[in-house]
Amino acid sequence: MASKWTRDQMARRVAQDIPDGAVVNLGIGLPTAVANHLPEGREVVLHSENGVIGMGPAPAAGEEDYDLINAGKQPVTLLPGGCFFHHADSFAMMRGGHLDVCVLGAFQVSARGDLANWHTGAKDAIPAVGGAMDLAIGAKKTYVMMEHTTKAGDSKIVPECTYPLTGIGCVSRIYTDLAVLDITPDGVAVVETVDGLSFDDLQKVTGVPLLRAG
Image (cartoon, rainbow, N blue to C red):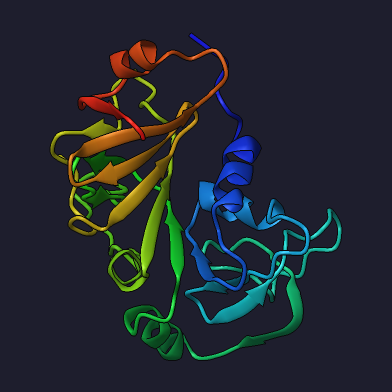
């Protein structure tokens, strides 16, 4: 098997696809790293559902301000022009279609683009899904950033999600540690793979039939 992309390499690849001038929400977990890899000179406005817009990259070690955090409670920086606002206003932005892109983590994505990215965190306990439903449906485009397989080696790209659904048919592109894939009307199309990984080898670790893009 070819070498996998690291978290930072995945984040850099996602950042390449975010257009200049976009308003973007980065979900909890892997997606937060995208803020550190936006191309120089490209203006991207980063939003966090707890009521922050205009975030910059992660702060340098020792310069963290824990009064300035994202929705995942991680310290962030604020660029000139950034601001804070009420949580309800933040959700109005999300639900009102004002986000161009959201980048979310996931446990599973189906061949149709259904998203499952929450689960029970403790035995017999069902936590809230948070703002993921609002983001997945409210953003103009939903990208998913996740590992290609579980620790057990099972594909996270599946015919049907078995985890609780966050959104139906909302995912347009998937970024994994092995490949970039598009959800199309005809199926899941391979856009790019890590160096040294063949189409056939990628197919072996993917739970749905793959198409060759283009």
